[in-house]
Length: 421
Image 1 (spheres, one colour):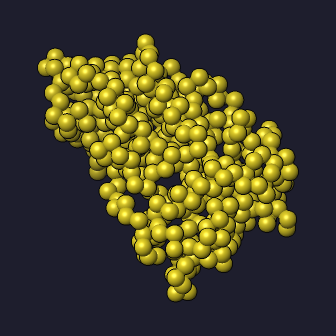
Image 2 (cartoon, rainbow, N blue to C red):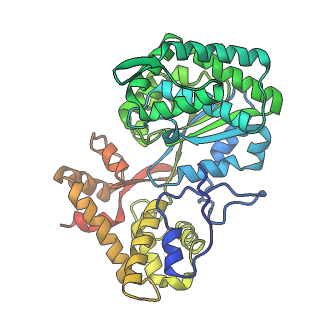
Image 3 (spheres, rainbow, N blue to C red):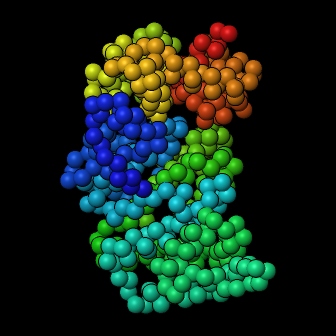
């Protein structure tokens, strides 16, 4: 998941444009220092997850980690991985399910195979050698899978070409799970015959890692929140007991839609939700929450020099962001682009208003009259109401959730002009 980005504070618009890349999970820091762009959120909500991992346990814990799109889940997972206490207790492996499977067609078997493969490949990459008996058992398992799985080539059936060793097997299996629907179905059918066999493979590798390294494997799987509610239910509600079986600590990212469904009960005890940054108190939109504004100012100042944006323009950008980091980056990037086109030295309020209008126009194209009615209700009272239309509005970020004691909701700030139409 590393992106090898140069984290340099911008002194001009060209560099600032790069620094507000929308899909830029921040790499973990080095030498015990955080990433130069990383900021600690108000209340440090990720501390709850860290505390949960560091607390005593009989069995390695499993957590279901979620939050709204753009709230910084990927960044927090990478930051957590570099925590010295986590590093001391755990042997962390972090990866994106996007690199291992097709997230449009995702299944619990894909996730299990990805866990086993990534743990094995990372162990080998670090020079780890599994006991000979375990290697023979894994080779035997691989052989059974290869024997049963076939692929169609030019109208003929042939054995799955996965190479001679386990490393080649896991690497090629991952590629085929992503790229070849027919092979994907066949691998799933083979796993279905012996799911416990795959669990045993994962647990054997985890046990070997712990015996050699002295630390418990910790698997952090990013982008598992990208599939829809149907897939999330299938993996985390219908197959919950299976997903809890691996004998290692795991942090699963989970679709926020699952948190607004009755099936949430399946993961309730181990669920953690990363909140947006609160910018105003409940039902008091004209008041500022100082800590929230300072957090979003820091988000900008770490990425570019303050002289590149007028103070009032920055305040306006923060207000329009709704306390969502990705929305802040989008507003800044769009405003920077406009300021650069007009050969300005600073981003001003007209640039920010332009950016807000661009986002507002996107919403106008996709929101229906019924959606606007629901949003008007939330704007009036900020309280959660039961409605099938709420989940898509939250996923679209048309509706935003905050936490101040009890959870409450508000409309994306750029949409308030639409509510008055």
